[in-house]
Image (cartoon, rainbow, N blue to C red):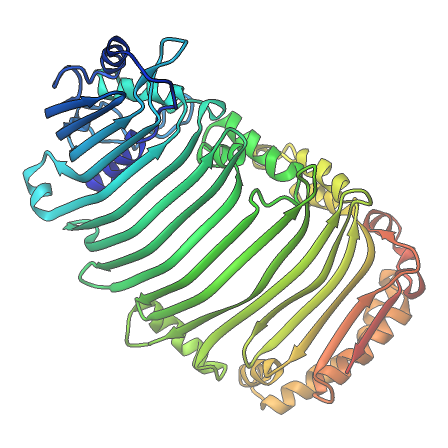
Length: 530
């Protein structure tokens, strides 16, 4: 079953090539077919029963692509860190039709085409047992307007060349790629029974810098290994405006140079998520004693004329988790923990709305909330500057140096955060059952009642000023915090807010260097319980 899934990757990459061109002469058509090893059946890895031509369009029927002829190994990366697909001795690809539209030879003498379609595709395992136990079919794969470099790569695939890496990012482009009606079913000794169906996979405007959009629709997955079973469904997941270079570096992170590029891309602009929009709809998982549901999750990024992200919006989402102690191993572990704190299920929700001003280098969180139903709600607002300076410090981080001891990760993170300036920062936590649950667990563990545990915690707040007196912390801060904690922990008020609203911003680095600056007046510190 694993081999047949690996072979499916070949079906996707086989469609990725081409480019528009003018009307071609019969000589150019023949030259293009020869370059692609499609002039005669069996001249390369492609065999077909029939071929018909109409102008620049060529249709092949009853096609077999001998992908089992590849000598690549999916378990080993090449010298550049690229992972190759293992179809050696695993499976071939069969299609009722393979259609090339706009077949031509460009000015550089390279074969290309404007569109390629493969209909009724089937992965055919060369192993008889594998063929009996598994099936993999795709209704259609269509590719529009790809680059000529991909066409040349495909020519190598269709011919007798050894498996090669796809072209570099700067030479990878296409207008659209779609796959419909993917169906996988089968079983083996390792993974048991699986069934997978995908209604469609679509990508548009793939270029050297960005991918216009990518979406997967109608996913359904079921598994049963004899001990555990489950199902996963997904209505749709889509992402738009993806940074191609970032994606390429992520896909090749095992390569040292690509990994460095990835870290540079991430750390160089920590405000940039690498995409413009993300959406997930109707995700459900049910298995191993857990039921997880997420109806909708989205994230939108607005950019200025220079492409710098300036607004980030995540509308409210809700994630629910139910546990069945009798339903499986995970449920047996989670359900007792929920019962212990008096919860029947976990309901998570959250939202955020923030901005970034590249001129002032200030990131502003206008609203941010995270909640667990019947436990607590946490919200915050902030204005933090020094984002560019922090990015520069992040770029100096070397994970390998952490391993060898050449860099101290704690010292590096202190340096990173020392670059930030705080203009405003406020956190609020609303108790919606949190403290009752904490003390109901803590009390018996300490050999006392929950109420006695609460009283003990409240009593300890009075000791806070004395405990911090030798740390250089302003006693006004310790006193305000102790009073607010006392009221909050006692249950007199259910909201605790800690805020920093300085008259002028303060740099975290300065405070780290000189703790005497940690005064209530300088920080604009307040702690209240309401």
